[in-house]
Length: 324
Ligand code: F6P
Image (cartoon, rainbow, N blue to C red; front, side, top):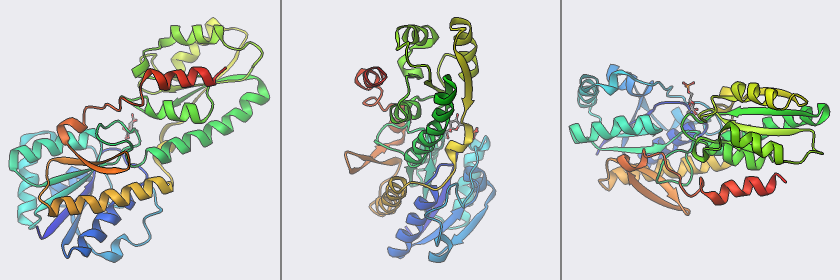
């Protein structure tokens, strides 16, 4: 391997820049060239390439977003799109790829490796933490800290006005942001797709909950079957007419901002390990960290969305016990 291409794809996540920096610096350390690919697979298909050196990644470790930009590419979902991407790589003498993203990114990468036998290593970069094969993805720690900071502020108003707040957090297919930030923010209840609590379960919880506590925080994952925070708000207003209820959707503030130290270190470790993995001949795998150790998981397994340990009855019971 002489020249490694690096791209970010899918939703941006804080810490992606730290990962790009680590990839570039590790490549230089091992005397390889590194090419930045702009706008994910879109840029790969269009040949949007920039050559990168030590200086092109200076002063970015602390920045949110991604200097390489990102996109969700429909073209890369097609065989013709992936064929074009392969031709661009060959024409530009790029012999291996490092892709930073989530399940969509790895689904595409998996097909690409199988079709062209081209070396690709993945770095988990998504705030959702919904990949198997790693305890944490890059961006998750920053996102849950953003959520608890926002909920702390909302709680001031909840307390002052004796209100019940329904706070919607991100997680299209996963309740992990809601679960951890709910515990960290001291929420009275959480609604996550994996728990199948549903609105009825939430109503029962609130009916049996403390009556003397007028302010309450309910965290709802965007992907929960209840149909979003506004829907939950409507139902609760009907069931509890005496409650003063407000809805707050946190939205994309969860995707931005300075990465936490945890995310910067995770990204740095992953970036270096990805380059070393390629040098050792690895391909078709995502890097993860499990019990502090670096681990490689085939793309096909990583995209299974399961972080089973965390969505276990024990974690859900934690929420129940702590909301007394
Ligand atoms: O990055 C993952 C995620 O934050 C999901 O939780 C969310 O549903 C989605 O991205 C929204 O992405 P976008 O606004 O870019 O379509």
